Amino acid sequence: MKKLGVAILGLGVVGSGTYKILTENKEYFKTVEGLDITVESVLEINKSRIEELGIEKEKVAKNIQEVVSNRNVDVVVEVMGGVTFAKEFVLSALNSGKTVVTSNKELVAKHWSEIEKTAKKKNVGFFYEASSVGGVPVIRTLIESMQGNHITSISGIINGTTNYILTKMTDNGESYESALLEAQKLGFAEANPTADVEGFDAMYKISILSSLAFNKKVSIENIYREGITNLKEKDIKYADELGYVIKLLGIGKDKETGVEVRVHPTLVKKDSALAGVKGSFNAVKIVGDSVGEITLTGRGAGSMPTASAVVSDVIFAGKHSEFYYQPFNVEKSKEVKYVSDFTSKYFIRIESELGNKDALKIEKIFDKGVVIEKIIKEENDGKLDVIVLTNVAGEKQTLKTLEKVKALKGLTVENIIRVED
Image (cartoon, rainbow, N blue to C red; front, side, top):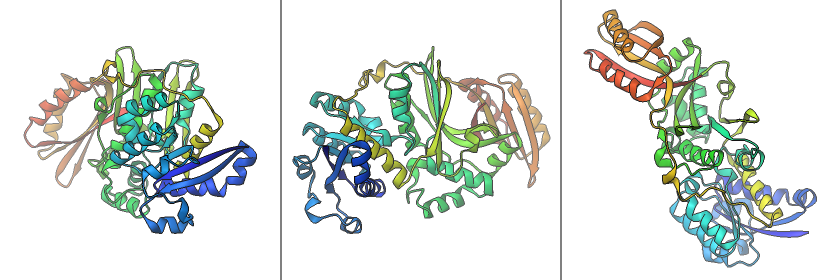
């Protein structure tokens, strides 16, 4: 039976879950996978975490050099988070001839080229299934199960924190602030939730997923990003009246004119598959020219779901002597052509201090630029809410039209949300 030694860098939420799965299922992996997996080393500065997991003192490394020089370690699992130290430690492990498994989406999105180049040079593996959509096996699906397809789009709910917040706002009528506080109490959101609520987390993930789907490196610098912090209860209410719910989506499309990748709040039809994905669950829709549409759904975050993906990579690495590297050049992101003026329907919420006459002015301005599909006018506290749902239009033309609307006195464009039918 093959022995496989593992080192874990970081015993936080995911690291602790990884340790538990590897140790508690040790006999199961022997029987089912034919691997005798042992955690040989851990690197963690928080002593209480080490004690809680009952890890032997002799397995606790003082620094990364102790880890990478350990001859019993075959696979190094990086679940520290952050970039600076994580990158240094990952490169150190690879240069020492160790295969690396990581859940660090920011690290992969920003430094994929250098890390994979090092892995290839040293003939070791670099695995990152857990970097995108937690326990949902989307990366292995893309690289091992979709070869018979030209993938034309990949999109979905890829951040559990924002989906939890938006579910609470939609189903319970809670404010953004209230839903965020609840998410923080439950551990779904960090004390500083910026990475999630401003769309950075989803941006890193859609960069990775789009790169794999379209076989070209999609850089984060070319992704349109917008978070959920500007959403109000009114947006949820009026979206509902129009037959939609609001989700933060990551969207990637491979078109003849170029690659279109964006992250933003999005109106989706109530009867769509994505509308029914609630709480901290995630869902990814992949469209291929041969298979058509497939959707993967599951828990996108949390200790055990993400650790499950980490362990799957550890086992995969242990059972394969030849490692997979991307067929596209991950260094040449500058050669990818991008679509900046994408098309969409638009939900636009405008507040007027003056009344119905302004609604007529708004309609006239749109008539000259963007076609209105539906308009709602509703008085609230002496002011008039004007909700415009447009037909499909270009981003630049829509924003140009809105500049003219903004020029009207007594009007405020409160929110602009894109629509995916």
